[in-house]
Length: 208
Image (tube, rainbow, N blue to C red; front, side):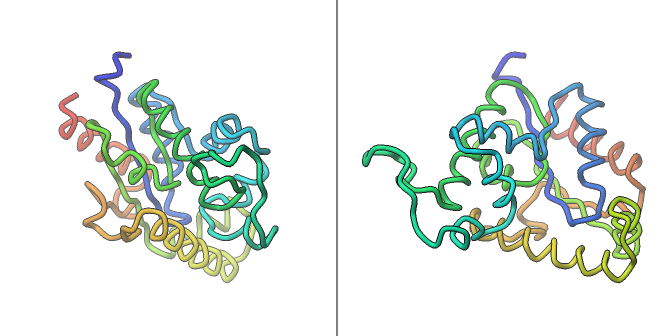
């Protein structure tokens, strides 16, 4: 695809809202690449670090600092990444991987501050997906085989971690309407219906 015509769909989501599934549907509908945790593979390749570090720091702040409690030199003193294995340097490698993927082809990114990382991309749609708590709980119960109390706890904790991560690295507000082009509650139309609605919005916004 001509790089000038590449487009990206960036999806932020509440835990249990179905954002991953909706992103998968949209990627299939548009015939484009889908990235969720796959971004971590790209970042590991980009940096030369084990994927383990990116997985443990994924949409959480401070894992590396708590693990090492110190900087770990890994390159020459002139390295632009700060010469240290830190959450910030891991985020930088991850951001570079996202940018390179978006340059290569049209794609869907789920989470990982992709909307902020690609804020200068000329053809992007930034989406936030929420859902009613009862639907989130039901989805997490099914996917994780846990009870309702544990599911609600994980939903709330997951949102707190994602908000902290996003707000720290982007200086924007996770889940706030003004941060995105469109926010939608997947409980209203269901996953397929939400994806269909978003497809229409995306086509109009990008003039596809």
